[in-house]
Image (cartoon, rainbow, N blue to C red):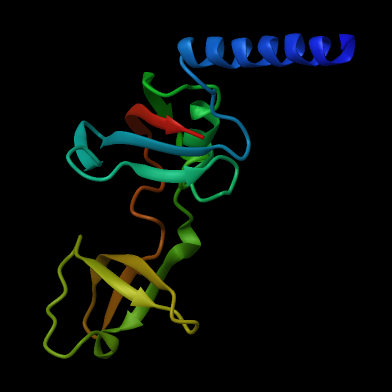
Length: 166
């Protein structure tokens, strides 16, 4: 009888502490958490992307699918919390790599395309994976493209609101 009473007391303490955690804001984001959050990404003073009015972005903390600097700064946040997060290039898309500039024959572009400096192209590698390329120079028979990520070298500013943590 005493052991049953001890188990009930222990169970009541566990349930009580779980309820207190929920009242204090719920579970904090940690390795393996399933997270949904709303965000607005601003770069150089311009809004680049936002989930407002759309489905929140979902990810698993630590799965490597979110840029390192953002995932690191979301750690410890709870559902309902909001935060402004600055992510330096080193923890986002890195700094531009000069070797990522490639000169390609203009004839390799889609027929009839008139490239312009700054134009974003969508390339496909041998495995079928798509990648962005930006036109940086146009020569007589060739085009110089930049294969760096378009946000390489940029500081990213995120306004985030955690929707859920499981």
